[in-house]
Image (cartoon, rainbow, N blue to C red; front, top):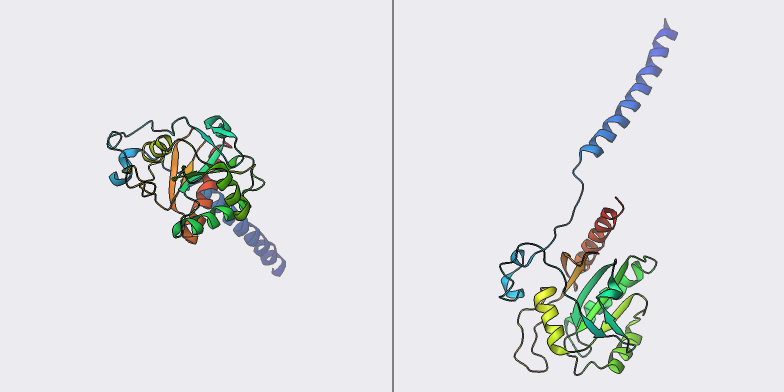
Length: 224
């Protein structure tokens, strides 16, 4: 009799374990897959969007660009073709939020160092001051790796239009002065189709962690 119950006790234990595994697999299969929004101008605070685009609800992408990096090399959208990238706006003489943003971007650089699918792009909002030589000096000081991260300068009008009309990252289009664009602290996550997939406060550690989590979600979406 004892052997009879012992036999069925073992069966019950094995059955319980298998049932738990199967239920877990079903639960995971039924869970909705995490996806990221595709941001359109109409979804973003109107203060950050050029008035000509505030009504746009679909098909928004980052415009073509031609700028110069810290090594004097011309950088265009082709350098970011088929890449995910994280963009921001800064200037080398900024005494407030930019040093924190740059430190956090350097942290991201370290975490993506071996990831060939992800790059970084920082635009100077004071291109007259931020010459190639100034950007190079800043890049060396901050540990910028040329293969992962471009600091770019160039035509002021183009940079401001990119900020206002493509990246949706500034609070004003400026009045022509040397420090006229009120850039935000945002880091912008851009996918391989040049669409905005997220905005993150580049001065906050918890936002950087959220960005890294979303980056993984975005990367997974390209493996399917």
